Length: 517
Image: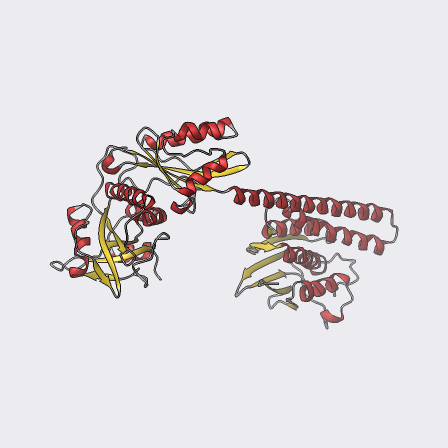
């Protein structure tokens, strides 16, 4: 299914600002749909040949959560013309809301058509007249359950008509604040309507319940909401801020959402101005009791903080172990024992890097590129070789879960050390091949990584002397390679292959599955 932007760009000549406005409208129009008890369809006129009747393309659709839908099938992508869209054409050409007309039938479903022109107003100039109509909103109501509306439904419909006029004026939806989502609160969470003086003229049962959680047990109707909210808030500054946002909406502004805490309860509020035809007549305040949501959030934050502290302590403990091994290595006279201890220090330190990164993250996952770069840098510093060896990384590892990162960093640490020490050995290295073998003036080790079909492909390649004649990885007795093979095929459930490169040197190819473990 094509997106709104794809459909508009392919079939119309609307500019970037127009498309952005349609996106903002589609992000906020669930409110209008729920208040209207109606489906909303966004129609744009499509380019056609001269002299041909205007046709319309549906680029977005939303169904109400407060009433049955008028459409069982998705209408997005549908192009219609002729008598079927006469009401859309009138709203588009006459630039007015169209409400006249008899009910129509969609199969066995009777529906009432309305059409709302969509304009874009320049946000930098509130006095500027709105631009020409760029789209039409079809408001189609399922009449199969028609009955005498309740007081709640009448207030919903009245508010919906005010918002529809604001769509036609170009003043709805309001600008979106940075970092703000459109998920809550919604109409069903709780709705309060204010008159021009800020007094409550209607409060839905859920809105009444939300304020009861804050400590107000009387009826909201007739109360001056900004002052009431300010008095109820546990934090005076928070209460003042909440009150100012309600007053700002009465002045025609659209302030960000605000949470109010009182008596252990938390209520999320959103204030919207009501300005049909540009005349401020009051405000709409949506409220949602988010007490349990915030309680779970605090529990998760506490859990995350505990997990980060555990990773921090594990990192400290590993660093302590590395320091003890380092001290022990200095007291050992046997070169082989000293080297074994120094290798253990590097292995422990590489694991500590993962836990250090996890201790600074809210997720049980790490950005692995930085860890690889630090391990590679350490490998060139500690490896025993007379060559100048440069490290380079190609591609990106991305974010890896902790269980993969811990094993993978040990594998890479061993491979990098092997690439430096055995690819560019010191002259007295007993394991080196013939000194007559060609060597690079400046050694280079390249770590490359890419993802393909839910697998991580890693290659550690050098331009050194290559593998010795008759080398068989499985029968090699080096501890480092044994660790690599055990972790690669065991913990990582992948494959590892060591081989000579065609142009000289050695490469280790590691493939690690990234699916569910």
